[in-house]
Image (cartoon, rainbow, N blue to C red; front, top):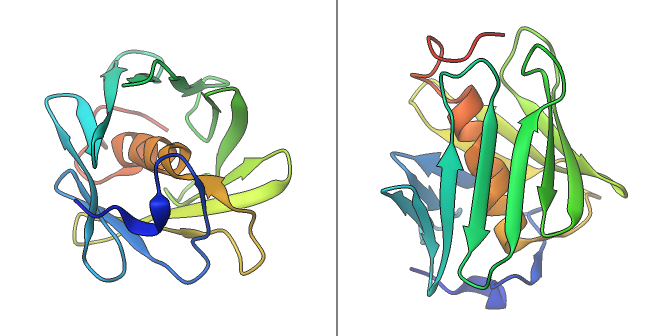
Length: 163
């Protein structure tokens, strides 16, 4: 797996990048593997996030613990999954659908919008900066948040999680 930009948990700038989750593998614009998911473990280089989720339960919850003991959580704020909240090692995020009838999300922190996720017809989910001026975000935060969007918004889960 690529160790791009000294990534382990440094802040990254996605303004010129397009990441893509497909078949539980996250790649960058150059098709280098950044992370992969196997048996509920997200692996990125020599670091791991052990994930726990409850897909299909009445309320969506996702939790991960890093190899270093950092905690990441994500869950619903209301009856629907249109707005999710996340806490990534003490950094708070809001994951909001851009339209209640679409699965595209904008992910924001206290400084503003940082990421955008878009499910694609080919079964992938793309991850980009929310705008040209989006703030940088820690690498593992971006991986965890985008993978949560894959679980909740990705193709194939439409029967499990209702809008």
